[in-house]
Image (tube, rainbow, N blue to C red; front, top):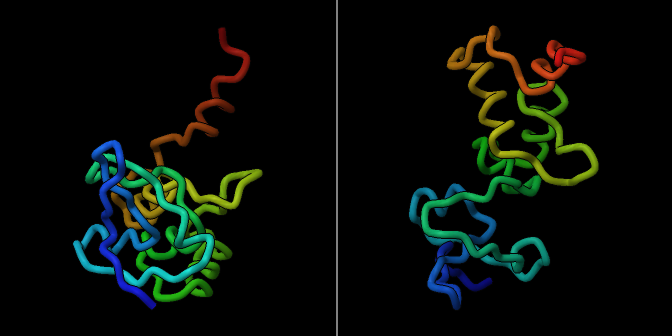
Length: 123
């Protein structure tokens, strides 16, 4: 398979980020296979990661060594499920979940869902 840098210039001068987020962050080259998932490229400014991640990207973002390991994290509630009605994971929701689990974020801090439930009917 061909190897390509994870950052490829776009026609608008920004860079294309491919599937390998961890490789992009480390500045490494990554293997690009001929599948629809890896052919899909997103033009973003340099240093900006996509908000929504595929299952493969989310697993790599979390540092899981395999998709089954990531699926196990999802089953165990370590990271959230894909957003309702999608097959995509919210990078910020993953960050928040891991921050809570590692103690970086207090349980006293409400999620948006918790805040909305608490403030429902107040106007």
